[in-house]
Length: 255
Ligand SMILES: [Zn+2]
Image 1 (tube, rainbow, N blue to C red):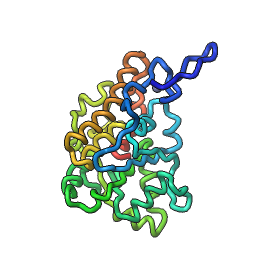
Image 2 (cartoon, rainbow, N blue to C red):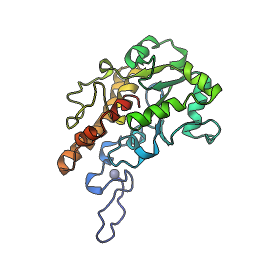
Image 3 (cartoon, protein in one colour):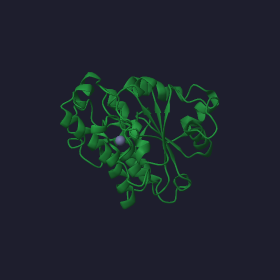
C-alpha cells in the first residue's frame, strides 16, 4: 500500500502512490516488488491526449505501476524536435530509427496483433532487439488525430509508414469480451480499455508463453480491481461513460 498523506479536515484521505482515494487504493493490486520487466523487454509508450488525462476513469496511468518499461507521454502529437533526450518520446524515435517500433491502431492496412506477432516470432531480429509498442489514449476521434499526426513530418512520416501497424481483433483477446469488463457496454467488437489493450497486445509480442501470461494477468488484475471498486461504490459505472462516449474504445484497441 502506498502511504496516504494525512487528510485535512473535511477532505477524503488520498493514497500518495496511486493517487486515488485511500478507500479505493489500487496499490495492493500492483506487483509487490514494484513494476516488472517483461520476458522480452518490450517497451510500451502511450501517447495520451491532454483531454484524456483529465478523465478520472482512465486506465493508462496505471500501466507504469505494473510495467517497468512503460510510460505515458501527454500530448496531441509526437515530435522528434521536442522529444527530450532520455524521455519516452525519444525512445519512440530511437525505436523508429532502429526499425523496432510497432504502432497499435486499427488504421488502414493494420494486421491483427496475434497474426503479426506469430509471423515475426522467434527468429525476428526486431523482436530480439526488444520492441517498442506505441498506443494512443483518447476517444476514437482523438486517437485518429494522434495517429494521423505521426505522418505530418515528411521524413519521420515515411519511417512511421514502414512500421508494422497492428490492431487487436477479437481473436487476439485472451478472454471473451463478455467477461472483460462486466459493467461495460461495448460500442463495437474488440473494444478494450487501455490497460487491457496493453495486456492483450504485450501477451502476443512477448511470445504468449507462461511469463507473458503472468504479465498479462498482472495488468488485467488491476483493471478488474478498478471495475470492482466501481461496482462496490455504486458510482456511475463504466458502461454509462462508454455509452455516452460511443466509439471511444474502438480507439482503445489500439488507440
Ligand atoms: Zn494506492
